[in-house]
Amino acid sequence: MNRYEYIRRYRRGRRHRRTGHAALIAGCVALLLLGGTAAFLWGRHRIAGSDTSPGNVVVMNPTSGSDSADIVITPEEPETDSAFSDIPADHPAAGLLKQARLLALGYDYEAALALLQSDANLASDPLVTEAIADYEAAAAALVPVKISEVTHVFFHSLIIDTARAFDGDSDEKGYNQVMTTADEFNKILQSMYDKGYVLVKLHDLAYEATDESGKTVMKPGTILLPEGKIPFVMSQDDVCYYPYMDGDGFASRIIIGEDGKPTCEMKLEDGSVSVGAYDLVPILEAFIEQHPDFSYKGARAVLAFTGYEGILGYRTSSAYADSPTYEADRQEAARVAQCLKDNGWELASHSWGHLNLGSIEMERFTADTDKWETEVDSLIGPTDIILYPFGADVGDWHPYTMENERFRYLYNVGFRYFCNVDSSRHWVQIGDDYMRQGRRNLDGYRMWKDITAEDPSKRRLDDLFRAEDVFDQARPVPVPDM
Image (cartoon, helix red, strand yellow):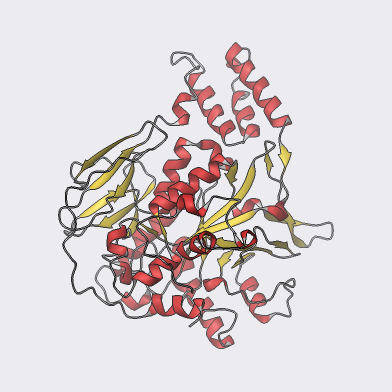
């Protein structure tokens, strides 16, 4: 069974319930390092009495069972706080200077300068004029990046509780192959940050414009970064929280937190629900809050949805139309989707039924595309991005043309950005009416292939991180081939 066939069976197949669990070790105490100074406190994390304030990263204890506890990690002082330490709190321009500096940390010097120059009464203030000079000099030193060399990495739902995901049941193999643990994800972020990577939006790479003849064409974008910085795109597939994942140590849905930003719920083994950083969205948000220079002009990742079970953990599919919560789920999913967009996240199609769009019969292809538009597009608003399920493109490496009926159909319903899966460091193709990019899977399978590669040339991740430094020791090994 090849990789794509297995993942499809694994996602769409019947979930096999676990028959029981062995007694697990209790009283485990661990110390972890976070920036060298973070304190780690053990304690039961529940909705009542738990600390899920902005900036806190909540990670499930790798033990399981009724006595397991969560780790509430309070990160070191965010860079955004220390970056403002030289601005007197009582200075009349303090608020303006802090807003401008935050924009500058995200490389948006144009917006920072416009903000500082917007108040004529403060134009001659020494701190304001000094900041303007600094940002003008920094802007002048920026260099354009090569769009053709921008890499794109992607993940699935993050494993939070490894003991529940890797418990020997029928789903363990798939989780081990195609998922990434929260611990691995945090290490990947830190490694990429240390190497100078900066997250950009997919829409930063190319944009539609009108040429001299009045025709709408796709043109390469302009990304300006300091010398040595490396742009990259990130995406997450299947942000749906499928029913088969219930009870296996994953988040159960995305909600809007008390601070107005997206966060996650997770069902614990005792049946209670906890709120915290239980998947990619809130973990990445917390990392960028601490490291604003990791995000170019507020960029976040691309989130891709299928529709057959629902999106964001809400049962929005027509298959649930008879459910008494169906309409409420659809309304709440729409609210969360809008919150994500308001916070810089790009939303994308992953097809409605998680189908191989390159090989299914055309009638089914068009029906699936239409169903996406009816059931998902109607909730999240129009999107022009499609991340192909299984990475299966509707064409080979040659440029798309309108003679390709599958591309033509997708184009006519509004898609302009098309992403497959490719193990190359970067593959970008910009045509007259589309942009195409290959993506790299950063999962258990890919990391294990790097770790066990006898030929150094077969290692695919060293430009991002060393797999040996990231690989979660809780994973069953060897990780089986796809």
